[in-house]
Image 1 (cartoon, helix red, strand yellow):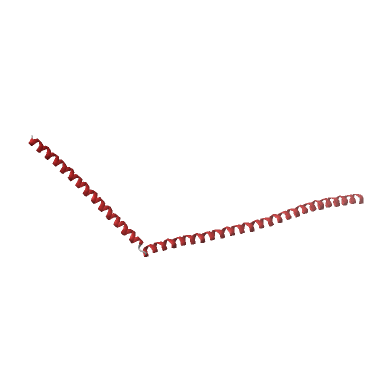
Image 2 (cartoon, rainbow, N blue to C red; image 1 turned 90 degrees about the vertical axis):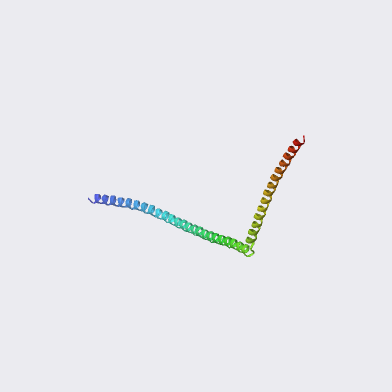
Length: 143
């Protein structure tokens, strides 16, 4: 029996060594997987930091754009208001209105003159017709 016990013991030791070898392989695979996970985690962290920085830069650019846009709109508004104030202070608007009023009066006067000329032309035509008719009647009476 001692031989069979030794054989059994040797078989058990062989099996345990096989299991230990298999466990060592599994532990090595788990170690490699752990290293890969660490590398992926580091890379992911770097990408997140980079993405966060890019988003921060984009937000900063948008803020600057908004500030510049507001400044531009405000500057444009101030410029327009200043020009209107200058025109008002110089009474340019009133001068323009006075010039327009003078132009309207001139147009009305010209229209009246044209109307008068047409009336006089019609009167002259009527007078000429009357004269021609009178001459015709007189010439027929003299015959």
